[in-house]
Length: 238
Image (cartoon, rainbow, N blue to C red; front, side, top):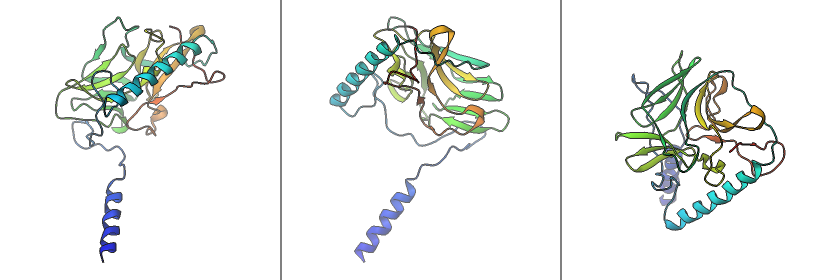
């Protein structure tokens, strides 16, 4: 009997832990989903203790060194969105303060990006109200969205970061890829883009909602990053 109760309890726990897809829950067009783990405040890295912080710092240093090397290769992976709305521009280096994005809605084609009052970042198809992507973080407390000098997009609740893009991978020393912007394309993708060689545009992060499809990266950005020289290298200008 005890074994039977144990397996029933385990089944119920696993059944209730399944991830649910995006839903629109009220008339405010602000999606509310349960928040997950918290991100550390000082350097915007997901940490449990000081040892994890050190590991993450070393990982950043390694990745940034790779970015410096790859930026000199010069292969062209051109990208040219036909039209997009610029939501904000990242600082070009560590010496420039972060850019704060106000609460509000930006439109491009039949899509909109909402930096919501509940702290959630959401991409909608305007004509239907369908949620295509969300950061999957919300709070009843005040939040603010920063495009930081470390090339990270971060949502803060007070001094605590609750969401990050993790695009700090692409720094080269103290320099960021030239003209790094957060944009919404007229095809429905929220992207972080920068200038590449030979007048090309390269993508650092993407919600993968092009064409109005629901994102397979719900709750995070898809990072277009490679540490291997050759086809697929993103040749940034710094």
